[in-house]
Length: 129
Image (cartoon, rainbow, N blue to C red; front, side, top):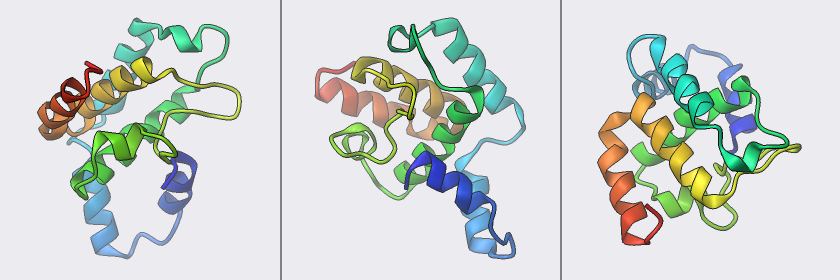
């Protein structure tokens, strides 16, 4: 599910407790995770976004999606590999794969740190970290 599709899902009926529980477990407790993620992304100044980059709103949609996909047992290659729907790219901006790997680690670290070691190990195994 792409980041924009994920946003549309979030606008639906919230009476489905399983869906609400999944969303709640995919993000950390407290509102600071998004702020922490954005602060680290802004400090990093990714080279791929030198001329055009995502908005903060677009960035904030990525980590919850990644966390849900990892919770469902998907791999980093599933998230960021060829034809991946969770790759950080928009209509006006793109992200080079090394930057996408780092962005993924930043998002996982702030939103679902229980998957950070797994993601880092997968990236190391492919020589991408």
